Image (cartoon, rainbow, N blue to C red; front, side, top):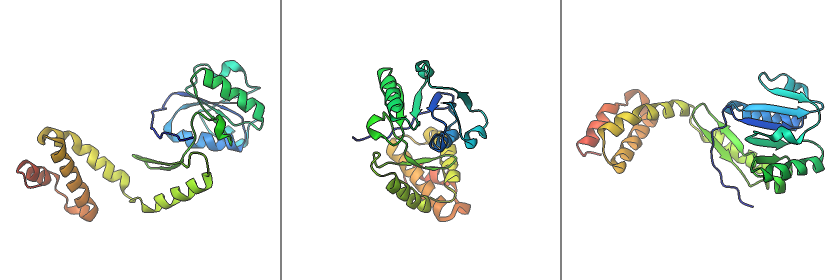
Length: 204
């Protein structure tokens, strides 16, 4: 099975996690930076989950109605039969579902993430080897510029000005490439207005 990697906004959307152990905790921690509404359902939960503010915790057995209005569901119990039933229910309702340690019963999988303020890099082996995905993530982390968030902010702040001053996608692309190149080489000497003027004059 191949998984298509797409990025979606989950801020404020309901994520139901069934199970309260350390696996459920790890899944919750991965989601937290993206600010969904997280609801945990389990008869017992680990201390780490209790320590996270703004997570709704229901200390009881799972009910079928718990997935109503959910954007995504994570089945993280130690009961494979229950996990399979949760997968079936979610599939019938077209709800994204992840079943821990059972990629055959997953509508989506968790990638290994490299996360900055302005960027997210996801690595997946389609569930075949989370260990190798983590290894690749660690290699990627070492190659990312320390000021990547600053670079992205700069390029983002230039977008409207470049669109206003420069017509044509190829010319705009050349401007952004020059800005990025000069920033990486020597950010203290970068002159964005000069770069735009050169593009207007056909010098790029």
